[in-house]
Image 1: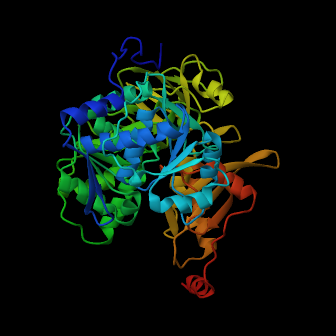
Image 2 (image 1 turned 120 degrees about the vertical axis):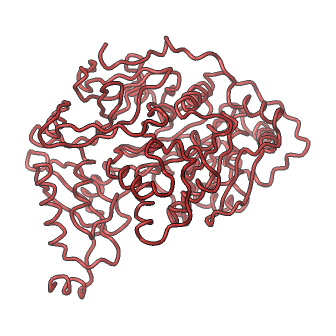
Image 3 (image 1 turned 90 degrees about the vertical axis):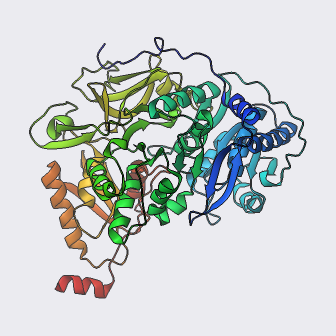
Length: 577
């Protein structure tokens, strides 16, 4: 059947140890081996965690949880990037308590997504560091009736007598809440079986073994940070070097220095992370770098930009970066993490397509071209179909459709949400990802999201393409801080672009809006009905860097964007020039 690759039955994976058993075995066989090294914002080592210490401290957490919670209860994990998060996570696995990683509130401000998660999972316990418990309680208690607030750093692991309860593959391991890019966050029920299946897929896909040092900075409450940077190294017996997200945001080149220092095999992030490194490199002298050890530079964002890959390679090839290390990939929380990945050492696969045909969900060459970056190949143990989202029929090879996935790594559903579970997870045994893609010669090309698709006068437009054109139209515009969406007006759909403006910029608003309209019209042959020039920080993004277009549309309709206006002298000077 067209669009179907290796079947899950044909490649059924044999039974394996679950993650709690993997940790217990490593704690016995190699107790002193370093599992994790933590760095501060200057790149200095602040803590290390061995397998033996992790096991012992996780047992202490498990014993405390068992005395206060019932199996299946939920526990919020609210931590910065620190060893205690990992200890608390495995403590939950040992005790049969369902962990719920949560983005820590900032400056006593609780985001709507956080409130939604707390209310949805109804936790019995909140685990954090002692110094954070009182402030957390002050901001969360009105939304959270958890009776137990536990400081993991105050729990002693001395002589703890606790025997972890045996888990089975269908037992929930944790709830991974979706990023909320198109709707309110939903709790994906990731089982022990899902975890071990996807960790094995990652091991094979990335070519990992115990010597494959990993460097990561993604937050632990995000699936890439937890499953990729924390659990995958433990599964393979490798060492993980862990930075904080704020360290990366402030000093992107510290990431590359860390890869150099620890001779990392694997590291990566969303597309914007590589752009940030290129921008910082252009702004000043580079530190001493040797990126020759970097074999898997994964880029898991949608869309992956060909110009990003090219610019990063040109900038850092003189410092040992090999273009063959590029590892474009695709995944989502509902599939635990990874779905497709590139063969190690192959590098990216680029596809020139007819942009007008693509707007009609067809693959063709010629005409106005658009370059797609492949997101890798279907991995062993799964099926991937490209399906018409309206008819639910498998698409022919030259058609764009919704990406459907089946395999042992696909989660069991959404937490206490049978309606959403039936709509997303019960499509003839497949997961409906909500993403649009094309499978060509075994390679998956992701082109957009079903819910984000803009349809004007019967023609399809992918918002990522319009955003990319808009943000490059004028030097005053902030890269990666733009949302394109459609609204209904006068009986037809109209295109709106919300674009953040760089700080301390001198520019005439009329020049900026004129440049955006001209660029979008020339490139996409569609008129922009309205342009909002917004102050920095107005366009919301998910924890993985995806633009929250639905949220932007709602904010636009409510008139809630904080508009950018230049200072009077800046405007006068810009008009004179």
